[in-house]
Image (tube, rainbow, N blue to C red; front, side, top):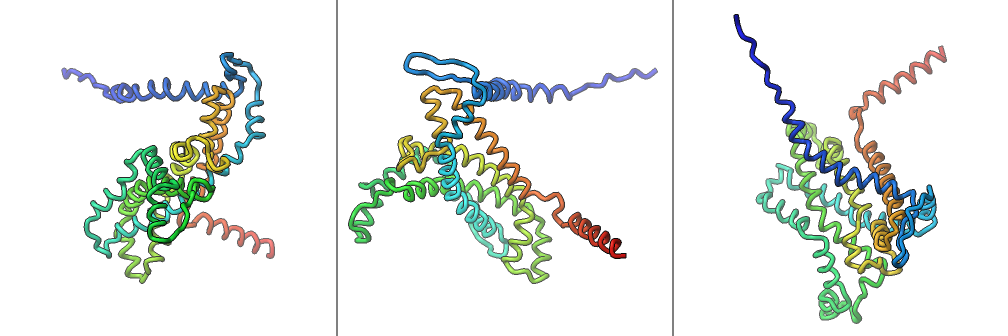
Length: 321
């Protein structure tokens, strides 16, 4: 009589290995998130040495934020993000297509990848301090321009809204275009070479190959890049905070939403800070959903749309008949 072997179940080890993550997430992320939403419905702040609250006030914090300068700071955040992201994604796409194109036979691509990615390793605070020193009225940029006779008086780059926003956008571009380039290069390298060979045989030029083959094939990575860029843009804080010393100068034209949130946290107004955090969460969720729907099409070849159009034409013919 054969003895039945006992089956060993290894599935439990998978749950044991992922258990530390869920414990950490529950303690350090989920509980603070729930507390943030809870505090947004309370009046809870410190006035001098006296602590007010927590007193339940419902949606009053949300209404107060709508009456404040929150929308203005949201517009500032959008402008700073656009200034940095538009050149970032354009140059990242161009560089990714250029380095991956086998017809160009570019040498030393690994070296260029490292050089492109290096700015991403520099801390934002170091970048901000560097640019603050370089573009100050007594900085090296003004000194060089005056020494070669281009300008007669120092330019106050940080004294104008255009100058400050341009510097913030340029710094964000320098820090993140390398990361976007590497991701897009990986996406393009994942496209089957047979598709490009077929396009060459059909006589496609470089522009047709890029817009009709490369871009549709890398839509998932483009969606990921756009979504992470939107979340990062809404969380923009360190560069304008350090560059303007937390004041959003000039005239608060470079004050972002997270800087506004930080001002509430400094004053220990936890109710307003919680309400602003909920607003940011809702806005980021809506924007990310819109981007996802725009960049991901479940019917890339258009067969569903064609079938729908055919059904409409058939109904019209039936009505006429």
